[in-house]
Length: 482
Length: 80
Image (cartoon, rainbow over all chains, first blue to last red; front, side):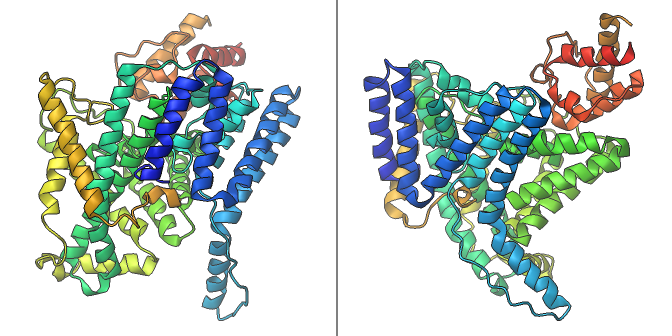
């Protein structure tokens, strides 16, 4: 039941009706409906791991409750360690067991020792990376006395399973979501209309851009050993745009659906491809994950390493970015993806320009030449790292890089549907013009209502055309599998 | 040293590290109120404050501050 599927639309319409017209008078019933709806949504995907979601919620509810009651720091810390061990332990078990086994075997193979261990068949529970991070932040904040736990069990369970962001984020902290669950929500027409616009734009990015690009990039990456460097370079460029439109499209929809039921959840993207440095890029790409790791991993690490000056900061950044890479999955390609991004930070830290303000004037129609060059440089670095992210194996990634760096880079690209290039350029131009808005379809500055409606209509019809023409069997969101 | 005097010194550190002359801190200022004061440069601010006042914070202390006022209280308890 993906956001871009008919069952979800039916589910959401029924949910919306019950939420605002039947249960709106009673907050407890409304929250119960969120919880029931979230579990229904989860079971539609896969009911097998619902027990794990409930177990995770129960354990963290109890830990939070007793942590707040604990009179000494020692008890609090023990409860926190139990929570971290259970959360990280289940993540490691479900996501990384086979990775450790195969890495272990191949490490010994290198020194000619054959070890006979079999990998085990473990299915990945949906959303585990996202809801585990949500509950961990809850415990960390209680420990730091930054958040008082709720005793309302329905509210807490709804926070963990909140369906708009259950499967692929944004990773909201308890401080964002729980106070909103405890307070009566009022239907706001203006907000609901704006949410619909955001969902429409998210759908457009996913169905019209990401899904179409996916067909080309899958073809290019599957047949990389037959293709010239030029095609592969174009494939990498397409993949960056695909990733962005897929994941930011998903996030726009998640935020939009949450807003339709009266919630403001964390923003996940802020036009990252217009960043002028890699530090700025990470402040604007998958923002909820970056903020999470910055707060709970990078900050304690950088505090602990602060006596080592810039070297300490570099080490903290490299560990942080490598963990971001590994978070995506159990593959050395993700490790290298994260490590590479960590390395990109080194010149910024050495030059001390990591925090220097380089904001582009919001009223400026075009960037200056140097701003444009900085954006281009950052974009190329991001594209290069995506080669590792997209490749199935490290050797595939290096093989693609070798081909891109060969003379075949100047050949005419094959099978790469070049008509996507002008479409992407127009898309990026529109994003640039709207870069100071919460989302691109905030077009209230267009005074003629007929023109605004014309734009919505064109987007809607284009989506419908691609839905009816496209292959709908294999168009899940990339981040749902993380 | 008075709390206001410490605030002034801390304000100067912020201006220097965050490269922004317009920063005016109050006791209630939080990271959300100051542009570019994020976790990435938070540690550079902490190190600069520790150097200026010749003090040492614990990791727990640093992570518990909710606003500038609480940070100043930590400094006060260490220098008096």
